Length: 353
Image 1 (cartoon, rainbow, N blue to C red):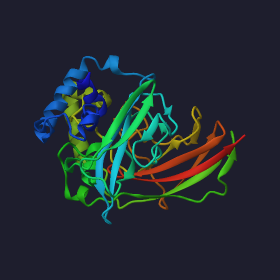
Image 2: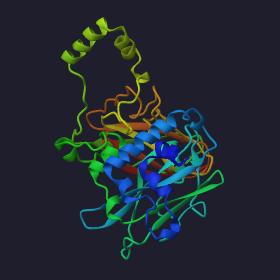
Image 3: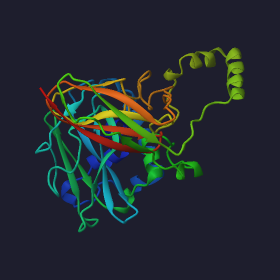
Image 4: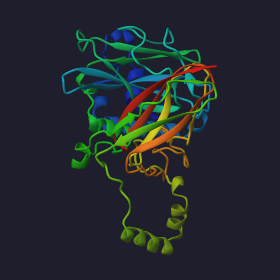
């Protein structure tokens, strides 16, 4: 079961799940297994072992969520931050867990800015928590999450092997293959996104509200579109190779070409719910690009095969209409994503009957 979790949740969750909270931050995984080559071998073994049982491990609902410690980063002013994400083991079910005993931290109070609305599947680098000034490598910040009757924890430490930079983020979200880099990627800056001020922040149930995001980017990484010459060569090969022609007719059915998650490049925005009343439903029009790793063919997701980013207006402005099913306080997030790095802005809306 632990091997299957490696394939399902990612290598960092593997280490989080195998830790013992009574070991004061010491991982139970031998150092040899944390070397790059061993990690790759472990991942390959996990994927092979998971293949036979993948069907039985695919669920639309009813499964729990595993919180994930992604690593820590240091800002230009010297401040350190723990980075967290999660793995919702369901493909369809979105789960609400209010801040409290079922969604809390052990240091600094239960509420550390974590989500209370959890999207399906893997969501990486969702939020960060400033490291307390007195924290050392032996201290742990623990995020506890209970869903569907099962409690799991993520243990954040300042161990040096967990430090994260922009290249690590780009690699782990799928913009890069494992262990790859380039001058272009290293020079990439995260896009900037801003939600324009709305005329009102209180609406009634069922009433629509139009909000507009403004996004800017440095144009890196560039989309890698095939040249006309390359397309012509592929067409010539397909004409003489029936097997290749069949693959080209349905490329989404081809086997993966690498062991890490793959992501299509291209600047885009995504709207999603970060916090809401339990069981509520928020409707966005037009439907947004998914912010979670939906790898299914045909999904409106940068992780889906053959997906391409929609065009963004020259002024960067994109309006969206939102409506709410239940009264309460909602926090909506708009994410700008260039395929490698992301930036978020958020908006709080109070909904009345």
